[in-house]
Amino acid sequence: MRVIYGFLLVAACLLAYWNGANDNAKGIATLYGSGTADFRKAIRWATATTLLGSVAAIFLASALLNNFSGKGLVSDALVQTPAFATSVALGAALTVLMATRVQMPISTTHSLVGALSGAGAVAMGSAFNLAKLGSTFLFPLLVSPLLAAIGSYVVYHVFRAVRLRLGVTRETCVCRGSGLPCGRGQRRRDRGVSGRGPREDQGCIGRSLSGILPGRSPCKRASFPNQCAEDP
Image (cartoon, rainbow, N blue to C red; front, side, top):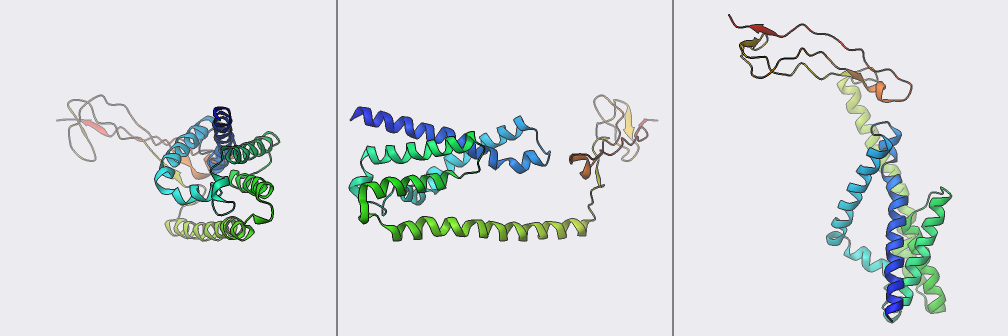
C-alpha cells in the first residue's frame, strides 16, 4: 500500500510541475509579447501570482477540488482508491508534458477531464456517469471561451473609449524627473520653498506609448532650466 501512495505522490508532483511549466507561459504571454516585461521578469511575475492563486484556492476552490476528485462520475468507493487517483494524475501529467514538449496549446483542465473520463470509463464501464460529465465539465469548457471572448470585447472597447476621451495616442509622452529637492540654501522657483539634500538638474525623460512597441522610437529627452535659485 505504501508503494501505491508513493506513486500517487510522485504523479501529483509531476502534474503540478508540468502544469506550472505549461500554464505559466500562457498567463504572462501578453505581458511579454507587448514588451512590458522581458522574459525573465515575466516568468517571475507568473510564478509569484500562480503561487498566490494556489494559496487562494485552498479557501475558494473546495467545490472545484471536489469535482476533479471524480465524485459523481464514478462510485465513491473507486474515488477513494489510490490506484484511481494515481492513474488520473499520471495520465494528465504525461499529456501536459508531451503537449509542452511539442509546443501544442493545451489546458491542464482538459487533460484532467480526459484522464478522469478514461480511467472512469475503464473502471466503471456502462455505470460511468455521462450526464455528470456533460453538465459539470463539458458544458462549462465549451461556454467559457465564448464568455471570455465577449468579456474581452467589452473591456477593449471601454478602455479604447477612455483612451480617446483622454486624448492618449501612440505618440503621447509620459515624463518623469525634475522632482529632486533643491540643495541647502536654495529654493524652488516654482514654489519658493527651501529644499534639503543634494540637487541634480533634471530633465524630462519621456517615453512614448509607441516606444514600448517593437519598431517604434521613444520620445526625445527634453531639457528644462534649473528650477533652483539661491535664497536672497
